[in-house]
Image (cartoon, rainbow, N blue to C red; front, side, top):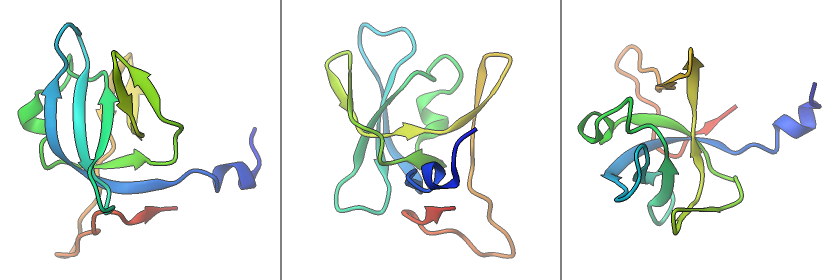
Length: 111
């Protein structure tokens, strides 16, 4: 169990994948450039290429953990994590709902 104050430390944002490239010499990694409503795109390294094609990821709205400490993966620095549900070892990306013609803007905080 965590305290509510621990949960509030997470900075979850709506993001949109703008670039998705397979990382050479890797079996499952993509290098994403994600718009999280900041000045620059955010580079995120993720291991979902076995489950999603790059074409289906570009322009997809996703949930991003933005205040995760950067991590070096295969020589590339990852600045966040995309969130997915796990079902029998298979990831399913969390998507942003739209309703009644209303959309959630990129960079919106998730609480």
